[in-house]
Image (cartoon, rainbow, N blue to C red; front, side, top):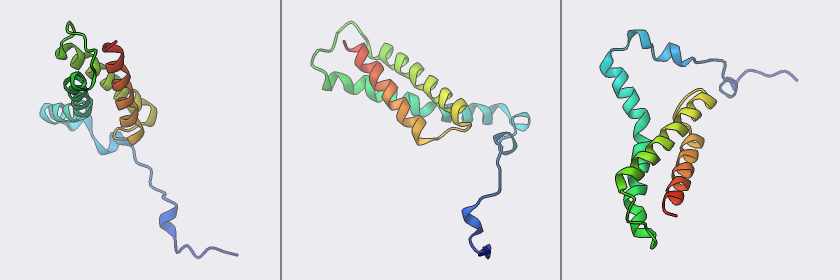
Length: 114
């Protein structure tokens, strides 16, 4: 039995390359800065949320750890996980990467409150 080719959309044939979509050599400094800030924004948002909400949820919150320190540690962990996801999957914005970032930040926040 031969296929009629009516369902071509099930077999995508286009291969995209991120270097063809975003041309870094033609990007100005402001565009590069906005791309970097948008890449880092989810990690900073999750870090800020965890640092500010954890005193409300944890009863044994140590007083010597400031929320700024927790924000910085969680931000670094979150950005690191996002970078690893970018290297592993080849592009950013994957749900798996965001889930790993939230899990890593939550584990780090839990360790900081011990």
